[in-house]
Each structure stands twice: as C-alpha cells, then as structure tokens.
Picture 1 (cartoon, chains in turn yellow, cyan):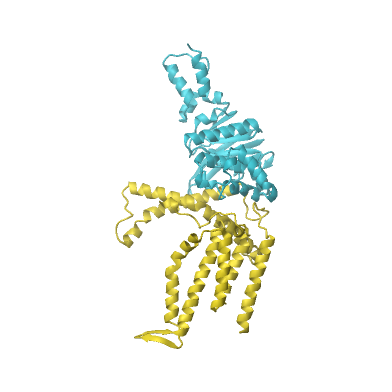
Picture 2: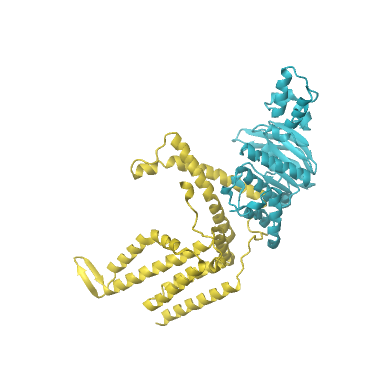
Length: 266
Length: 276
C-alpha cells in the first residue's frame, strides 16, 4: 500500500503547456501569484477565471485531477475566509454577542477565498505539467544568475534531484523495515496517538542508518564517476527559451507591471 | 597497463592500533586482460580496487595507470576518466532519475558536449542490453538490470579499464549471470580490460588471470587452472573451488579417474561423456 504513493502529481501529456520551458512556468506562476493580490473587483476575477480555464484546457489535464488537488487545501481556505469575515473592522452589518460581521469583512473574505482558489489551481498546474526533474532543472536555471552572490545553485538542484531520486528507494525500504519489525511482533496500529508515534521509532532508526550508508556510498560512486561540482560541467538537457516562452513571459510581465502601476497610482 | 608497485595501506582503528589492509602488493594488468581478484571479506581486495581510480591515495608505494601516477593530485580527474568503477550496491550508485539521466551524469561531469550525449548513451545502453529501458526509473528495474545499467553508465564515459567491486554480491542468480555475461562479452568483443573483484569462485573461471588475496597479501596468482590446482593453499585460507571442480573432486573420491582438472560445467560434461 505504501508503494502507491506517487511523488509529485506530474501527468504526462503532449501539450503546449507541458512543452513550455520550466523556467517560464515557474516565473509566470510567480507573476500570477503577485498579480492575483493586486486585483480586487469581480470583473477582473472573471478575466482571471477565463485565463485559468484556458490554461487548463491547453494543458490537457483532466479537470477532475485539478479539483481533487483542491481538496486538501479546503480547510485552509475556509479558515482564511472565516478569519477575514470575523476580524475585519468597518461598518457593522450584523452582530450577536461578541461576533460582529462587517461589510468590509465580507468583501475581504470573498476576495481571499477567490485568490487562494486561483493560486492553488495555477500552482498545481505547474506541478501537474512539469516532471520533478524538469522542475529542478528550471529552479537551477533561475538560480544560476544568483551564483555571483554565492548562491549554490547547482548544489541546491543536485540535492533536490537526488532527494527525488531516492524517495521511491526509501519508501521501499520503509516497507521492508515495517514488515521485518512486524514479524518480530511490533505493533503500529493500536493505541493512542502518542503510543503510535512512539512505535515509529523502530522504523525510523534503521531507516536513518541505512540512509546514511547510502549517502556515503553514493558520494563515493559520484566521485568515482568524476563528479566535482559544477566545474567544467555540461548539461544533458539544456534549457532553451523558445518563441512561445518569450511571448508568454512578455505578456505576463506587461500585465504584472500594469497592475503594479495601477496599484501605486490609485 | 596498470602497475601496482609495493602498495601498502593501513587504517587507524583507534589511536594505538592500526590494521594493515594491504602489504607490499605488486600487480601488473595488461590492456585487454580479464583479471579476477578473489578473497574473503577483509582480505584487502576492495581497498585495492579503490586505489585504482584514486578514491584512496597510496600511503606508500605507487599505482600507475598508463604511467600516470595516482599519488599526484592533479592527475586524479584523468585517472577517474580512464578507470571506470562499478560498486556493490546497485541502488546506491544510481544518481539519475532514469537510466538515461544516470548515464548522462558521468558525461556531464567530464564536460562532454550536450548534443552528442544521447548518441553515446544509446551506444552504451545497447552494449549492456538496456537500450529499450532508457526512460525507466531505477525502482522499476531488477537488480541485474540496475547493475548492467551501472556498467553502461561507466562505459558511456569510454574508460580504458573497468573495475568492478563485487558487482554481483547483492544479485539473484539470474542477475549474476546477466552481469557476468555482459562482462565476458565486453572483454571478448571490445577488448575491454576488466578487473573483477568477487567472492564467487564460479565467476573467476573465465578470466585470464586470478589473484588470490588474504590478509592484505597476494597469496596466489596465475591462470584459473593454476590457481585452483593449488587446493591445499585455497583450503588453508578457506576459499572454495568452483562448483564444477568440487563435483569433480567428489567423483574422484568415488574412484572415477579424469584426464584433466575442470573448472566449468561445460568442461566437466566434456570429461564425463568420454568416460564410458
């Protein structure tokens, strides 16, 4: 059962969105994040909805997958809405005992809910259309200019991709250790939460020990194959901005700049 | 040619005791040879292997790869390019998320041009019979397949020598057979120099030269026939004979006379059918 856990939620499709450079996708997701907080009227949210719907359509990702991805965030969304509704000051619409709901509160709550909704959808589109390893490449690509400021871009990306590579291996191992401990009478299911947490210790310790051994051996294998950081290194899959990337980045950037200027001007 | 001259190695257990793992070891390995090194755990065979591509720098003595000194720091990258290494645990040497990414890892390290990488990877993958699995992640491969792609990853870098440190000890019999077959073919077809470290006697019978190590010393050296003829010596250090040779010994004890001593199943069959 433990084996069924999938890493990331990448769905392979041969779509326009999938083919975009990962850096483009990361950047426009960030632009989107900023932009969405600069918008505060219903008409403009309709435009955002159209933009999001179009992106989903072009990505060929089934709508159900995206809705499913919203589920775990639902409690957070509801909490934010309630907090905003109750704790914003302004003209009172309704009050009972210590509860006071204001007109401003309702507006803010509504907008917050909509913003989080779009935020989750757009960022999950990023992970749905980009494989973890491509995403790592993209992050490395975006961080590379920061090398001048001693940001270890290559090392961060290498660490991330090794972590991704070893997740299935470690899940397999956890499964084996669990079975081995169960065979010796370990009980992981009964008892209260404290007892259950304590029963994880006999799994975690062997898992950690083996992870350290693996790290040691992997480091040696990497060295044996001539690894010496990013010095004199070439890339198997070089990232390249195509025309579509440039156009989309330009459009999003212009839109964001417009929104920022409008915000400042008002 | 690899030359190991008077190589010593000891490691500190604590402040007062140190353990000698290699003791005045001298070995010469010619290009194109298939050399096996056998011995028990702690015989020094793995330490020896790690000296061959500079993972351990000689404390005393010297290792020469095509006359390049391993002991000099600035040679290290050239040596790691010349001598490829495959390790015991197939999982812990898989760096990439898929076979092609793993094969690309070594190429990226040596600054191989990006546009030629795919060709090299396909070439190497086909050599080890993994050409159809390039996009597979490691956890969807059997142990033998993982180890074969580890060999492929090293081959992609076109090394002159291939050192394998107990590559089959964590595999099932099928995987073991696959790996040994790949090695034999590389040696025969591509004249690849292979240095195989193992404790399975059946794997060494096909090599040109066998080196037996015990307690950091080379105790026997020669062709498989010569080495396995030395039964008393092998018994002394608790090393078994290959399965076919054991069977032949048992048959001899039953009073059957053979013309020749055998090491492989094929040779034993050859001997037996002529008996009657």
